[in-house]
Image (cartoon, rainbow, N blue to C red; front, side, top):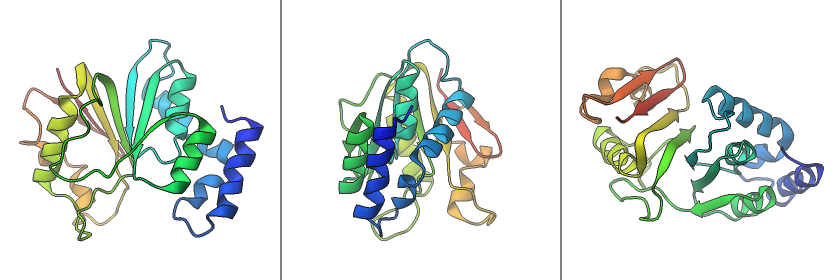
Length: 198
């Protein structure tokens, strides 16, 4: 949970960084934590069997904190950013500052995970264009190599009503064909893609 002291310190970041795009996460931190905790429950992470979890695009780390509170070993990756660095220190979780670049593997030490999550992350190139099929194929293979047997990658991309938008591709089962082996389980619901390797 988020303590009163953490809540106060996180709210103060909104004053320090008023124009930061993530400043909204400083408003009602306890509510943001509750949302993250609900998601952890939806993913079966309230069970007491300890898992090793990596959250790509962790932001302040409310989801990582929830996982740790439920007995898991969890850490996050997000862009190098002063406000994020301060927030994760307040929340007290492991954070790797890193730009995720297409066709560049994650650092060697990031491995042995049971679950990798990616929530609301729009992967883009430096020129602002969205990642394509080949870019996601590389990332999926890289993540697979960092998972324990039976591990899973769970994505909850930003939703769009524009069916032609590149993000909409992520919600199509056929789009993942060729990205992951045929024996891999790809389960798509209204807001989530779960890829499980056997």
